[in-house]
Length: 96
Image (cartoon, rainbow, N blue to C red; front, side, top):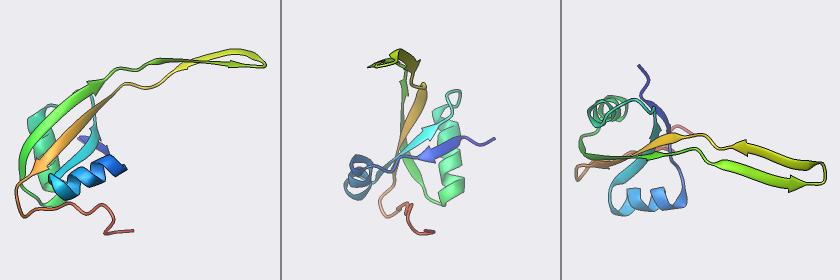
């Protein structure tokens, strides 16, 4: 089962990775912290100290255009912040 959907590579998460040794991932909505910890340890060969998760609800979006009102919504997702033990690091840019 593929638990990790994609890493979060933003300025804020890159800074947290460098200073706090914490990395962000978008994960499937139905997985728990133990499954996330196991998946990160197997995928990146690191030791995970802590996993924090948060769920984001989808939001309605409305745009007013010349053609009329266009409405839609953004998708709901679950985010995991994974803190590694001291000495371990994840390099997302190594295989580019």
